[in-house]
Image 1: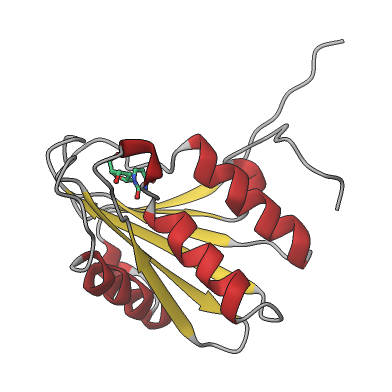
Image 2: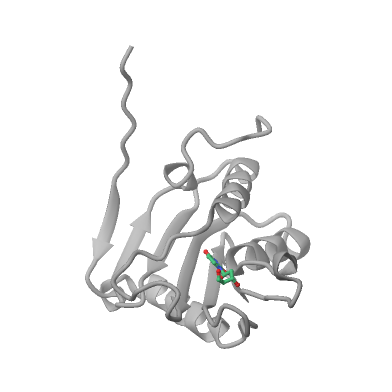
Length: 158
Ligand code: THU
């Protein structure tokens, strides 16, 4: 039997059109991006999350000369939240980046491993995470739930 899966998302021509709370989160992600350690890829990524208590926590990608030892910005920030604010749910996650690896008009999109970690965070807290992706051309995409980024994702059955 044929089945279909679709999802809706928002596309904004410029992230400065977003509600002020989201703009603050984007600003914090750009700020965090400055601390990226990316001498190998020269692709700097910043991530910020707004927790349920409205606190903002940030992270950035951290690379290593033993390449696979590095970690993406999204996992840096989500694992930091898990380790330091285990009782707080993540309300919104914002991702920004800078570098030639991805042409500026192309969608910046989290890697598969980060989607997996984002999905488990969402499942554990039993509450959807909004994801704001800001392209290098300043367009912003808002996705309502991680499940839209990883349908049929592997899950431990939370
Ligand atoms: N990277 C992230 O931090 N997040 C992503 O969503 C994709 C890629 C990092 C990993 C590596 O340090 C650099 O960007 C190039 O892949």
